[in-house]
Image (cartoon, rainbow, N blue to C red; front, side):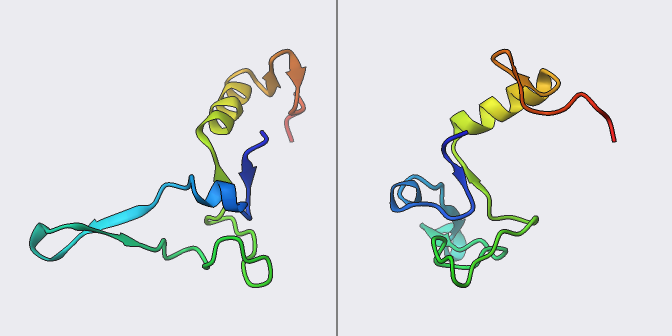
Length: 86
């Protein structure tokens, strides 16, 4: 997973999906911030990794992670997660 981070780069920031809501009386959409996140998203001084949100990942990385989980911790023949159950 090479495109997953808590602090997106400027290139990644340009590719992040945005959140929208409809305007008054169902009018035009307007962009809205995600309430669980602290902005700006690349601020390493005031933004911290949190379990409730803030890990950014591109579709390819999510697909790889899901494939690894579906294969009991193995992806493309390499084990990433232990077979041991805690």
